[in-house]
Length: 461
Image 1 (cartoon, rainbow, N blue to C red):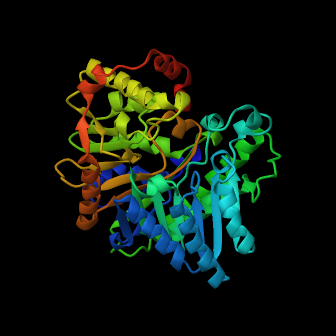
Image 2 (tube, rainbow, N blue to C red):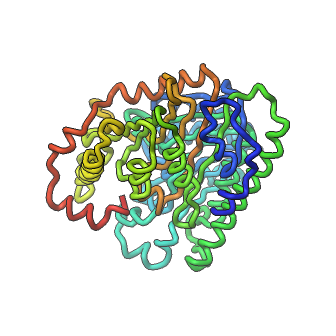
Image 3 (cartoon, rainbow, N blue to C red):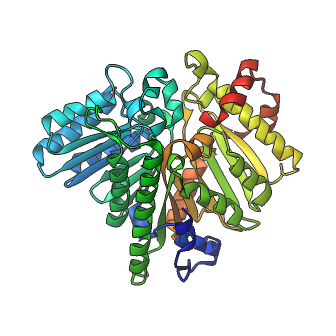
């Protein structure tokens, strides 16, 4: 990614002084200027589901979906049925679905079998692709048992495109995510942005299994890494140059700017990681960064940046063990909430030991019957009670997101007071169910076997 980080046009600048510290964004990512009225912030899982149904029902040209998997419950089936009816009535509509191979083929009735029902009735209009990490190609995919083979890497992007709108989220198309699993969801209407993410999905599709998933990738891991890296870097650079040209004549009424961020550590694409670290180190003293992650497992790079290079005040929001999606899981997976607590406990000890407890706060989300899966950050300039920027998408601030999974994010900056207020309301809604947890973490006891597991397998979480 070095060429993207150094070859930008630094004549482009945010006009607002509150955002000057982030002018470097123009140098690493294509910028998509939009009006704030085209940004729709969704805060409720059910509204997320209703929005997907509405968009897929009314799409006229294209529907493109990237998700970890599609569930098999009645809500998911209804969403697919709405899509099927639209496909049958509109023969020009195209549907493209990208899922993870391991998760999407788990069990006899699964994501693949459900989507294949659509393919059968509208074969010329539908395409199903299943990404499989190169680490699992060949005999590895058969040696490791189901569920555990997923720890080696997943298609984790969550993108929902209908015509010219793209909905960015960390939520999957699954019953839990449509009801009582709290995530984040921001929909943006912009044809160029939708085209960018559609092309990103298309690039991943090129090296994924097609339709029934029988075809194997013929590339060696080394060759595949180089080719994917080149294709994704070229895609980002193509759009960055295109948007730079467009920005020279952009309508001055645009008050919001979207910068896509991609992370594919498996293929040496670290755009999101690089940008996140630079956000943390660029935010000036007196500003406030509120971060959230469903699974707390900071990389050493992120931890060191927060502790050594960050001047802003920080809050870190994560799931309480009772709000962790793995709570009550059978077998070793049942220890995962303990593992994340242990990792958070060790980080909090580093905060205390470095005398930074007055600058860094740790919070846990706990809400009866709900689980927590929200992720991203909000940037509050010094003296502002509203965020002027946010990062949203599929990536957690953890080892798996950085090293193994395919992730898609976006940084959004705005000077619109109305959109800032909506972002603040979104953030406040999440924090309404949060409590400071430093003391609780230090007092919390973790089973000995979890200590050993975390030491051995932390990079797989």
